Amino acid sequence: LNVDSSAGDLESCVAKKTDDSADVKKELKEKKGLGIVEIESLREKQTKHYQMSDGTYQALSFGAPIHRKGKDGKWQDIDNRLYKENESYKTKDGWFSFAANLSSGEIYSVNSEEYSFTVSYALSVSKSVGSTAPAQTPLAVVENHAEKTSLSAYKTDAEKMDAIASIDNTTRVFYEDVYEGVDFEYIISSNDVKENIILNTNSGKHEFVFYI
Image 1 (spheres, rainbow, N blue to C red):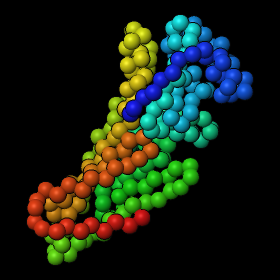
Image 2 (image 1 turned 90 degrees about the vertical axis):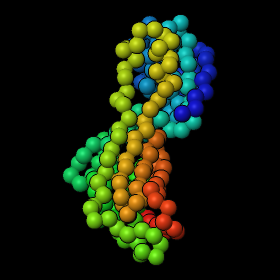
Image 3 (image 1 turned 60 degrees about the vertical axis):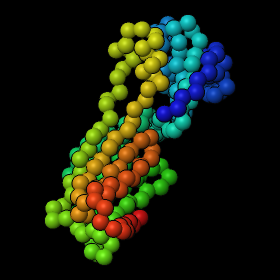
Image 4 (image 1 turned 30 degrees about the vertical axis):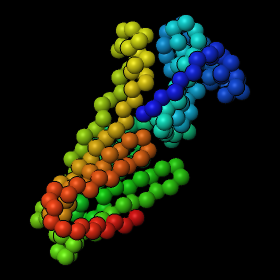
């Protein structure tokens, strides 16, 4: 993710953004003098604010959302790791859900604060367009991103700042042989899903039908 930063006096930033919020003042008091630490009550969809070792603050704005609102209405770090739940792999907040197998044709669902939808594919394609359904039901192979490491695990301020700027919330889901010689790959990053259709053979025209 691209990162822009700005520095200044933390308390003036708080006054502008929060109208002297009691929650923010309480957090500032609790974290004063603790070195580099995030002021979580100042989080925005694409921005984090940090108290620095010298008492100033650093605001980091990212090129994509890094927070999603939890059930309590507070901004939480995006965690796109998928966990097996019955016949699906889901994020802990339920934002993304991927089918453990494609027997029904459903691939994934998105359930955000504002909308929800499910993406499915046609279970068979005629031989005239070059692909037929495989004999085996495609199974999901999930490669989760790493768990976020606490800043306390880093010894120097430089190491902490590198960790702060290096947000990884990218998870990969792979279905092999959805059709003969055709794989589906899904890259989840931030609040987005990128679909890659991988053709392993060059056997002519391919057409794929999806439903939303």
